[in-house]
Image (cartoon, rainbow, N blue to C red; front, side, top):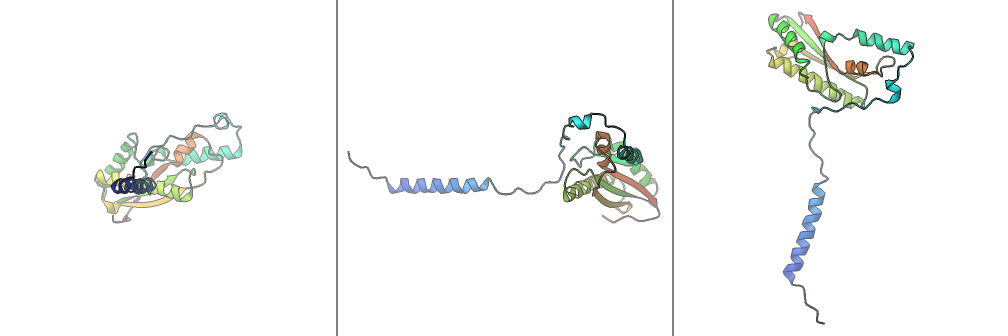
Length: 187
C-alpha cells in the first residue's frame, strides 16, 4: 500500500474550518445588551403552606391593615416582574390625566413600589421602570412633564406576614399622589 500525500490546499481548508468553528463557538457566549424590564413573568406557584389558612395572629392582622391602607383608586398595579401598564389599569391614568389637564397648578408624584422578592437593586430597577411606564402613559394622555414628579421606593419589607397573593399584588404598584401649587420635574 502506498501513502497518498494530502494536498496543501486541503490542509489549509481544514485548518481554516477548525479555526472558524473555534471563533463561532466563542460568539455563543458573548453577553447580550440589557433590555428594559417589560416581560410578564408568572408568579411562583403557592406552596401548601401559603394556600392553607393560617391562624390569625398579630403579624397577619398587621398585613391586613397594610393591605387596607393601599388606595386602590390612586394606585396602578402591575403583574409580577412587569413594568407594562395593564389594560385594566389604564382607566385610572385617564382619570388622573383629566384632573391634571384641567388644573395646571396640580401635580402628581409617582411613587414606585415592588414586592420584596428580588434583590434591592432588582426591586429598585423594576419600581423605576414602572414609574417610567406610568409617566410615559400620562404624557401620551396629554399631561405636561412639569406636572409629573417621580420617586422610587423599590422593594420594601412587607409589614407583618404578607404571604397572600393579594398582599403581594398590592406591593407591586405605582401610587399617584396629587398636590396643589408645587411644580414637578421637567422631563
